[in-house]
Length: 316
Image 1 (spheres, rainbow, N blue to C red):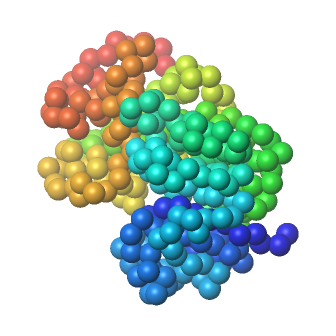
Image 2 (image 1 turned 30 degrees about the vertical axis):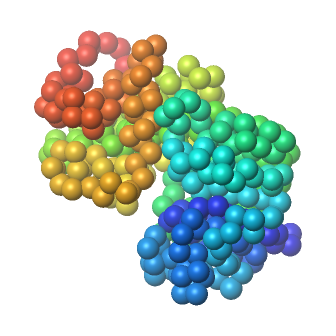
């Protein structure tokens, strides 16, 4: 298949990593950066977000959103900023792929819902799963989920976006894929807090297991297929982000109990998602509730842990 042009809006680490991987596979890639595009293009490297990785010849950076004219547009913009971007730059691409992981704080919508409202005629898909930008940019083997309600369109996108190092598995369960990517970030914060507090690996494993049960409850309530949560976009991503300091959400959790500084400019999607879940009284989300209260300073970690440990003993 002849590599086709692909546009990527968002020159953070993940957007840059995808631009490098797709460009290396022969796709002409246009990478939109909110600022610093000229520097990125001239240096052939995104020094601020993904240093040490060279942009391929097929990839160019631009600060002009009007330059995004390809049939496939990848939106690598955090969920909480996605609505603002879409309002300012309504997309016209016929196929739009979101890479955002989270639940929008104000609307409770996932990324694809925000995109579909802004571009109702477009085919909208979600790309998610266990991945770090540095691994994708380095060409290391990475497997992701591509979720699209239209399976034929999903198959076409799967073919277009897969590379030798980036293997995409598709599903039509967009809700499940979105929620897997959003909810695992909440659990990663809790896992980081547990390790930061010195409670050990066994406690982290317990948080991951009970967190996975919480993820499935929320997904089931939203109408998702539980099998999706057991795949790359749920369990796979959960394992990765709860066990590596490459994860921003995990590092944020560490900072909550180690009393260390954390760069406020760093995107922590799990925090907004935890706050959104904690506001829904109808959902049983004790770990998300704990994360939201801990981050807001409403509980210290000892009190948060006591709250979790005092939950009724019951069958697993």
